[in-house]
Image (tube, rainbow, N blue to C red):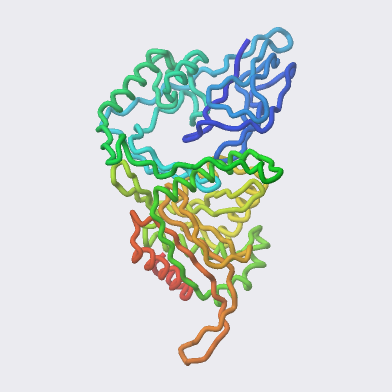
Length: 451
């Protein structure tokens, strides 16, 4: 008899919803066979089996919310009487050594917007944990089911524990040591200041009020929010409460840029791309962020530090039937317009068909959202934490503009709205950033000179 539990699905993912159970009791499962389909905050994915045998019991059902380490199925001997292999494969190599305290390297924080955004980085997070033995990620941990259960009960994340047993196996003592270290760190943290109104810590900024009984006015129905919608609601509330938003708005003349787009859109289509306005804005944004790196930082509130990133990964908001998702285009500054048109077309299609991976929505430094196709003009986009700014573009319209000779000319004007975190970015910084974008659209040579 062997048991298969939910592996860790990635950083910052503590639970998932079961969408489908893909096996039944009596089925024979093989290694890497999909057992269940789950929805996380970032994506929908299949969970592959690490055991072989005949399913004797299924411990989850559709609609359940499950956590890493939770029992999914039990399997018995496969046909022929051969026992199933152990749940966790023997390690392929010894664990990496843990760096001594005080010498751990500080890693750049990464954002995970799905559907809005990922939670802000934890201020007192420990250095990166030793990865599970025999795996390049946290998909499997070298620990028995009993140790996994014990760790869950006392609140220890096994991905942060280095095993001292043979081949890096995690023991009960390892878990207890990690728990004692966490208590020691908490004890060393200064106590929160007393709030003038009584109680410790900061005042509650958001205290939702109970809703009235709408049923007294007529028939009602309730519909549970999807995990994606709950994630968007939580992250947007976090962003609005923690970040003092400032939104700057500017209309930019894209008449010449639109003519260029029309001239080359067929070539992009032949290459498998779709040359939209967003593609041009993406390329210009990448150059603008290189020239104004403050706009792609993250603010560590625990240390009062800004985290600058030497890469340009831009998230692009995509409207889907499931809700808003934000896949990330990586290294935008290193790609040309045609490459970006192809990649943006591909990730947008994967977003609409719900085939994005977890990594597709991670690591963004800035977000672009375009509501022009829906007829929206100026609007106030909400920042995608832990980013500090977001650019929204709206529907371009032909507008009479007075030229230098005092004559009215029809020009295609596009609304731009930049929301930024006023803790980090002043209004003047945001205004200069927008002016850089306007100048780049007016004079594409600026991209070559400064981008």
